[in-house]
Amino acid sequence: MKKEDVYKKLTDAVVSGDEKLSTATAHDAISMELDAYECIQQGLNKGMQIVSDLYEQRKVFVPQILRSARAMNMAVEILKPHLEVDSKSSGTVVLGVVEGDIHDIGKNLVKLLCEAAGYTVVDLGKSVTKDAFVASVKDSSPQVVGMSSLMTTSMVGMPDVIAAVREVDGNIKIIIGGGAVSQSYADTIGADGYADDAAKAVKLIGKLVGA
Ligand code: B1M
Image (cartoon, rainbow, N blue to C red; front, side):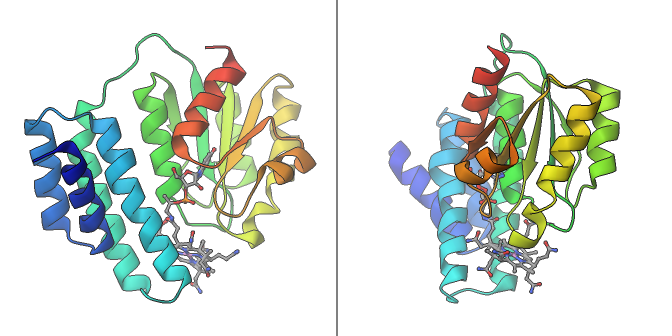
């Protein structure tokens, strides 16, 4: 089997929410010594993006979305130990989905790729309050705080988090991402950057911390 066929099988497994196929294909990918990062990006993530579009078009519904997310997560767990970890870049990144928002699939991808790039990630999870971001900045002194939002109702909480975090540490870099936000929103609220996918988020963090 060619690597493109494996990526496509991973994509199809996520789209159809088939966890048996996603996990079996992840094992195949490992035995073929394929790059775990590429399997996640070219295979699983692509599948999740397709499912998201189908949901928007009302061609799939919540139960299918959840099956797809599970198929993806189970394959990620198999691939994760095989990600090449870059031991050179270092630093701490605090990540969280903003308050009121439970969409964490994209944030989890950002976490995974940050860890693969050698960052220590403090994952605050989903629906994270401003106070929890502030407490985490005090506790772990990160170089970067990353906020994710997929809902127009939750993205409006980002400016308050930025102000509160900067009160604790004026030098901290703050980035945002997720379907609800954009570069222009990042500029408007004074974030240091925006990324539209997880791989770009890692590059952006590297640029901001001078790695
Ligand atoms: Co819902 N949901 N959802 N949802 N959901 C959206 C976001 C929505 C756009 C669908 C729609 O109606 N068109 C809509 C929001 C509308 C809006 O505000 N504009 C919506 C809604 C309304 C809701 C509910 C309110 C539905 C309801 O109950 N009536 C409810 C909300 C509950 C809440 O949060 N309080 C709800 C619930 C759910 C599920 C639980 C069923 C499930 C979430 C499961 C989970 O996350 N654990 C779900 C899902 C899956 C979606 C869609 C279909 C897919 C999101 C996703 O995971 N995409 C979504 C529609 C869509 O996005 N097209 C939708 C795949 C993921 C890999 O992409 O997260 O964008 P994404 O991440 C990308 C980039 O954005 C980037 O990297 C990733 C790719 O590499 N990125 C970052 C993400 N975070 C980043 C952070 C960074 C940098 C990059 O730096 C820090």
